[in-house]
Length: 191
Image (tube, rainbow, N blue to C red):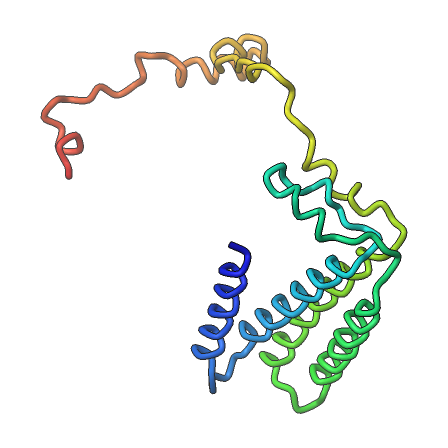
């Protein structure tokens, strides 16, 4: 399954490159290339060993993937995984700041550089001695057991509100205000 997923990503990248070949705007291709390269780098670093694996975020049906991860302070690929992208990001910023660069090219370069910078930060989070999983623990909270709390209808809450607001809501909440539909109404018979 993972092999087909990776092949689909490569196929999509090839399609993007083919569609944008010789076109003036290459931001989409650059963005895809940055995301693909840094995603592959992160996966390789996880496989080779990093400090922060965040394996507690794996769903139960993917828990077996933990057996492929190694916990190490760092691996030999990591310095290359952050140095090369950092040099590329610096080169992209310098290219964006050149006097002959058009505004569109400048914005495109800086947007892709921002994506690359975020990916570099993500790589550093893999090895820094910080509890990075605490950043995302809020999303892992389990809802309380049992049925969801019942919601009171607006009509029951309205009298509790300020009298002026309750009197303003009363006409809108009355059942007599609902429009009656006629059986011969053309909207009922539209197809």
